[in-house]
Image 1 (cartoon, helix red, strand yellow):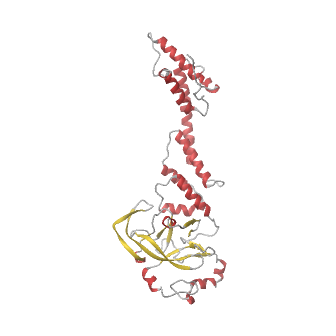
Image 2 (cartoon, rainbow, N blue to C red):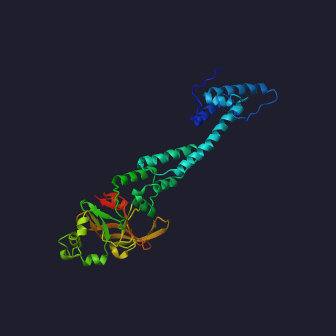
Image 3 (cartoon, helix red, strand yellow):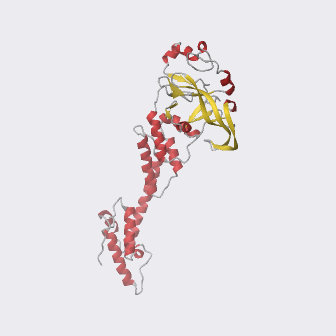
Amino acid sequence: MEINLKFVTQLNSSSYVRWRFEIQAHLEANDVFDVADGSREQPTDATLADWKKKDALARSLLSKSLDDAHFNLVVACKSSADMWKTLVGHYDEVSNTTKLAALKAYNDYHWKDDMTVTSYISGLMLIENKLKAQKLNIEKEMIITKIVRGLPQKFDNFKQVWRICPTKDITVEQLQAKLLDVKRDVNVTSSGNHDVALSGQKDQKDREIFKGKKKAGWKKDRKKLCHNCKVFGHFAHDCPSEKKDTSSEGRSSSNRVAMPAKQQLGDIDEWIGDSGAYSHITRNSDWFVESKELDPPEEVKIGDGRILMATAIGKINVTVHNGKEWVPRCLKDVRLVPDFGSFNLFSIVATTDLGYEALFSKSEVVVKN
């Protein structure tokens, strides 16, 4: 019988999985695999001659599919079953070592100084593929969490937003795209920590920052128009920007405008930019200039896993800085969540859906059109 192993991959140090699949199929096609794997033991009756013939064929098929190094492993074997056991046992032992090495590589993996977003994620995906090859599967949520937690300091703002409200059902590819967008616009500064959630640059006309306005105060002050900054609520002689510009401090830091909110995180006037929230959220019912009740209330899942209820949806008037002056704007589709925390969420997603662009950096989230 002519043996044709043309379509069987030769076993070498890197081809075991494919070789085993192909050689097993070849042994089965020649009706000798049960002899090779030991399930058909050597008989003592009249069928012994037939068994020996099949064993010889199996030994021939196996030996012709091995490179020199693997042939030396089985050269002393007396039967095809011994050869099969030796080869499979060798790679089972290697497999266990490989599993431990892959798991250690996964646990030790972290961002290095010379990495980019792409190389960081690609390196982790390579380790994940090695784990999969060893039949060790890591849940997608664990991969996503490891990616986010391992990000360097320049992504701290993104990580903070992620902790508040992680994006559901995001893929690694989608997360990578988000991080590339963030990295593209990151501007790491060596200045101290900033306590404000959003800020704008005076030299960018289309950048805006947000501060909530209470309903009553908004209507009361509409008749006061400042001819200095063109913002309702005060006159030119009381203009805070005019006072700031005349001070030496104002001149030295005129390239930055911080929103006039209280300085401690958690103040009710503060808006935190959130790339995971699908809607703007506040607990301040008196801010709404227009609203309608949600019947039944709408469930809102927050970052710590709790489910809160949104009881209304509507519009809130705010003042924003466009890089040059404070101007009135209106936030639409804001959810009223009475049990929400002592700050407000500004939905980056809801804003970008309207055609705006969100730029993340270490100390700010800037929205521009």
